[in-house]
Figure 1 (cartoon, helix red, strand yellow):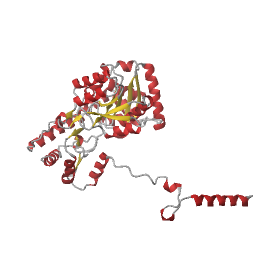
Figure 2 (cartoon, helix red, strand yellow):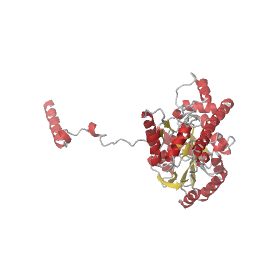
Figure 3 (cartoon, rainbow, N blue to C red):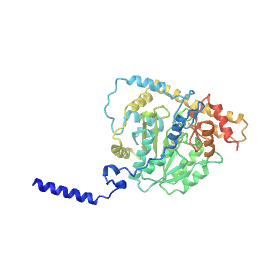
Figure 4 (cartoon, one colour):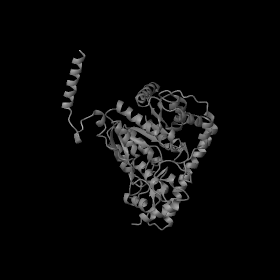
Length: 432
């Protein structure tokens, strides 16, 4: 019997070998050696590529205005004092148990107050389905998957330009994308008429992605009156507004002011969705703390939507991280720490605003015939400079200044020590 089995096994092996096509060099196919042979390297992320190039540059004069993270006037990362105090309070007192799939209820409740208002009727009536998310990126992705699952035929309208990852998020969720006019290159401001036309012409029931404040990458926000017109038209057309709010408090220094667009839409009776993040306004970049909320028709619908959001999260990551959520909940619920945070976020915003003024003044002082008022009209972390890709290339090659080729300048990278050098370089490359 054993001999027969060995003979049969040998025959099968010879047959398989005979059918296996040889590879180049005479080697034969092996599943383990070719499973990933067809995988090409992904293209480099344009922003991360800027940082890599900056780090590799030995020049003592190099400047990085590509990074999308706050820096102090010495160009150093900052940990807020309110965060340090919150960390001290939880040190040694935190177990490592899982949070629920929906995350920290305490953190979510405090986060909703920032977006919807401290005394919001929607919070009191339990009409908001909300879950903790992996910062703003995770919140957007959860919503994109929710949109695809429960409004499978809908399209998402995304502004031109926008944060590049928005396209990746809705693409990977298999949601059809369209774009709408937003930035006007000639005026370096809002293309309001183009935006309104696109909202008007979109099929009824479309989804619109809106930046609540400090539009990334342009720094161009609608005025309050423009937001009112946008809100009314979106409501008239039966569209669904989804706000990405990554910079609340960081834009103007006042979280209430930065939530004005959302409050206008709430007053107009919209059902809407919001992605919130604490990366920028609390400096919790690596903690990945965020929240996704969807305003529903009533409390019963809110329960249903929340359970479905949790169901989507389950195979993705199951449970969000606990440490950052605890920091946020402590800071927002403690009056002293919240007041400390409000002061610190205003300091960050004011430094950015101050650097905008300094950059514009330094360029104008050099006698540039161009208008640079857009630098101070725009708001938030980024300035859409209006520089062409070829001019950006010259900034890098001649002056060792690193930024993305669309001309987006991270104002967080501008300091009192480098603003004159940066202004001179911009003047030189924009002369002709």
